[in-house]
Length: 400
Ligand SMILES: Nc1nc2c(c(=O)[nH]1)N[C@H]1C(S)=C(S)[C@@H](COP(=O)(O)OP(=O)(O)OC[C@H]3O[C@@H](n4cnc5c(N)ncnc54)[C@H](O)[C@@H]3O)O[C@H]1N2
Ligand code: MOO
Image (cartoon, rainbow, N blue to C red; front, top):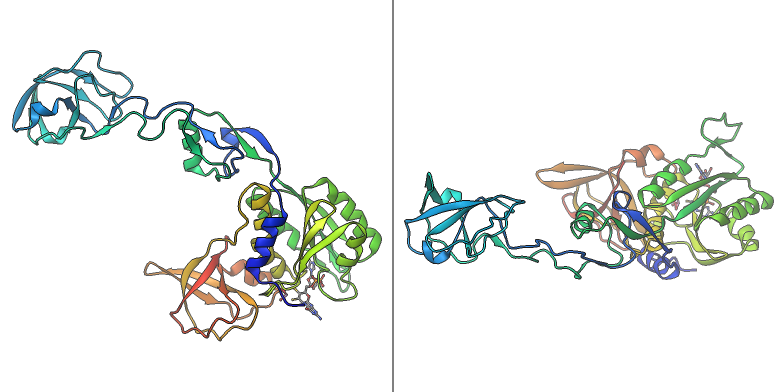
């Protein structure tokens, strides 16, 4: 069976998964969540014509020729309008954010004036409408300010607040149940028996799930037998998505596909044209999205960065997409690539305003020390030609 390209796998995950339902949360809890309904402004911003600068509000015609002398008749600080009207020959002291007084049609900044008591000398000719923010410049009541599917970062949250919302409809956080598989594994902190090792990947997976907006549900370790796997599959049904670690390959003890088939696993695709991570599996366990990550810890975490993050995006109403890549210069030459997309662990350093990526000398997919040290993964498409040192490549930055 031909291996599936990474981009096709991400696309299939996006198509297979439907977003979860919405819930209403306060603005304070909405950070990094995804908006589930378009958001209309409850008010107009700015609500009145306002000054963009500290200076004087006046009639343009009074300062068309300079120097001109005007009489200061009052003040309009931010938060308090000047109650009167500006007439010919008059000016109102105004501050940034202050409402434009009636009768005035321009602002002259204070640097272009001289003041002595109530007398104001204008030194630079005024232009109509200068330094005035018109009512509704930012948005108007009823206008859509954020679209469904918007990620609620700092700017979007502040915009929602400016539009006078206190609570937002966001997609529910996906609960992701996961378990490791293998007789060789013991939980962290326990003394492994002869031929055993510590199950490590779950710790990283939980952090990745949280970072992607999900809620991790660690079900521990399934043993390499039918009963144990079925028991975990059953427990996983309370979550919105199920992830397994290991047992995805072709060995006799790699039981996941066979046994979970009994529990309703429907495999949509298996095996990806990538390195590390070839044995990745995706489908549905009953009606829940299912991701079978490879056992090797580096393979599992690299696959989670690509495919679990895409699934979590989709469950929260966003497009499933490959993580964003940065351009970086290679520190060393690379050989031409074969048919699998490579994710090469590399150090990432800034040098003269550019990123420089240097592959780690050993790329074994069991080595967490390397992945933890790597600042990025160099992404080499299938059949990429040999590259010289200094050539630009795409890298996927890692958060350490
Ligand atoms: N004949 C073949 N052998 C293998 C192939 C292949 O195509 N043909 N693929 C290799 C690749 S690539 C990978 S990746 C691994 C993945 O296989 P599995 O998903 O079946 O993983 P396991 O066999 O269960 O485990 C592999 C390795 O990882 C350790 N492991 C598993 N789970 C954890 C965990 N939670 N924490 C830490 N370490 C874990 C496990 O002990 C094994 O050492 O298969 C290759 N073989
Ligand atoms: O996919 Mo395996 O991930 O090459 O170690």
